[in-house]
Length: 227
Image (tube, rainbow, N blue to C red; front, side, top):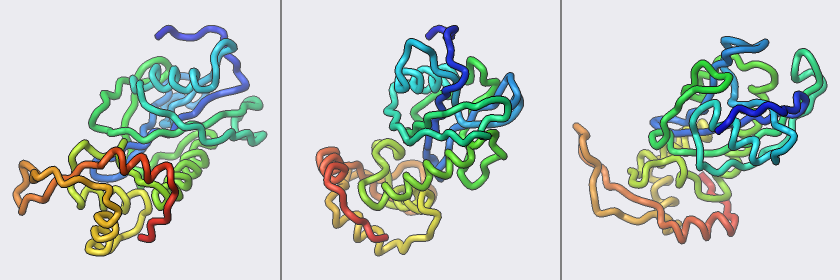
């Protein structure tokens, strides 16, 4: 993918990419140039005159991190007068949830490094990136109780404990284990793989996968999951 030349320097894109390993994480890049050189930030950059906002989001994310072929959802525009220190810049934020273990992160373009950070240990971000991240987290926490979350974050086969850890990490609360399992299994969302977890020193847990048809149905018909 080529580096753009005809950029608009008053309209930008910023991407909030969530991933999950043992906890919820967000993908950040280290700026290699400009006024925020050496600082970690959300992957972002200028759009060009001949591309749509969506096209710009996918291009910028790929050039900075190597992440591609994932679904990006537009969050909203952020346009505070002083959000950028040298001039008026409006940014359009996107977010996505991906399986962190399935992607190879490769820093490029204007990024000297790219890595996952726990949402509990975020470095000081430039501009209004913390505000954008907080807004994305709020949206994610609202969504988790109204539609199933995890299809794009967990491995294809997972344990109920991994699923609970995901919900706890997103919501930043401790859930009652028996109650959580009863409610999740009662949704008929999971399929028993009839397999057990490999390579663990303790008692191996059962593995499950999402029933994709039920998953999509629950996404289309909003519900309230009282955790």
